[in-house]
Structure formats: C-alpha cells, structure tokens
Amino acid sequence: MTKLNIPYKEKWMEAGMRQMDEETGWLKLDLDAHRALEARRVSLEESQLDILKRALLRADGTASAGSTAGPMSRKQAAHSPLKAPPADWHDKFGECDRRTGHFQVQLHDYVQFADSQKAAYRLALVWMEKTYPGTLARLASHPGGRGRRIVAADQETLYTRSPELAKMAEKLTDDWYVDVNLSKAQKLSRLRTACRITGLEFGKDLVVDI
Image (cartoon, rainbow, N blue to C red; front, top):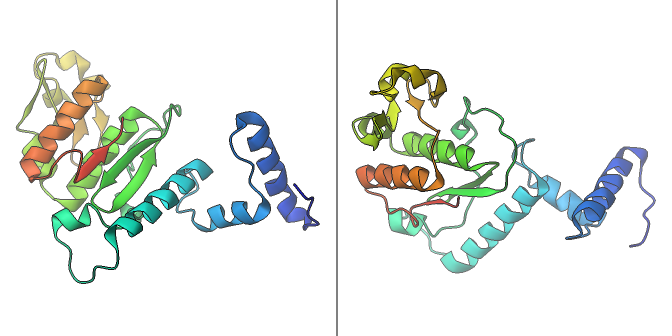
C-alpha cells in the first residue's frame, strides 16, 4: 500500500488500520475506505465490522426492493432497504457484556448488531415494545417454563416458584424486568412467542441471528 502524506491528527487512523490488518489478517483498508466506514457510523459503540455489515445488508435490500414507492405493508417493510434504528430504541438498561460475536437483530427495515446473544435477545424485546406498544404487557401473561415468566413488572413475580432468584432479574425497560438466564433455544422460543402475540412471523418480520 502506498504511504500517504497525511496530517498528524489522521496518523492514528493509519496506525489503527495497520493494527487491524496485522491482528485479523482479513482485510486491509486504505484511508479512503476507513473514512467511508466512519462516515456511516451511527454510534461510538459499534465496530467497523458492524458498519460494514449494515452497509452490505442495506445494499442487498436496495437491490431486492427496487424503487417501489408509496406506503409499504408489513410484508413489504420486512424486505425494504435496511437502516439503523431510531436513537431512542437503544437498550438503555443493558449491561456491557463481554463481546462474543456479532449477532444480527432485524425488525422490518431496522437492523443492528449486538455483542452477545443476551444483548440481541434484550434488544429484540425492546424493539418490539417500541414498535408495538403493549407487547411486554401481553408477554407477561405467558409462562416461560420452569416456574418463570418471560417478563414481569417486578423481580419477584418473574420467578414465581423461586423468588430467591429475583436477584438474577434484569431491568429491561422502565416498567419491566426480564429473565435472561436462558439457553439459546429458550431465547428463540420466547421470541417466537412474542412474535405470535403481535402477529409477526419470526425469521421474516423479526430476525434474531443467535
């Protein structure tokens, strides 16, 4: 790669690109590519891989959707060009987990990548409540199995048979707690339940790749 004569403030970007290439061995970015990725950043928390994945998904969605104009149905929205979610859709109570991968969460034409399976599960529930208010209230009436509820208004109610486990409950929104001590299969099962009660098709309207 040709060395560029760049200002001092931009030399850290060149060093970061070189380090990324040496550590991963995947893809060497020149300065223009780095700037293009950073121009598409929607939050400081996302990695450049997150940005690249979102850009590729959006490009693929644009090619599939064409130039259809006018209001879209729920079915059409699931296949429309993908975009970052609104700023207030973030999981404000989510704890910073150790990054274990990039797990896609897509609801209709919004997409984001979470750092862990738990984060992806929580984010999907938050998004469904934002899109379809009352989802969590309806979900609270559905048992999650093993004497637990999927969500509850307080920590004790979440674990109906084992109130001593209440300390494990995590706050999901201002009004709801969620059980996250779950296997991958249990997380997916509960998301399917959430889709059923909102009339969505899991894997199409809501995609959670964990």
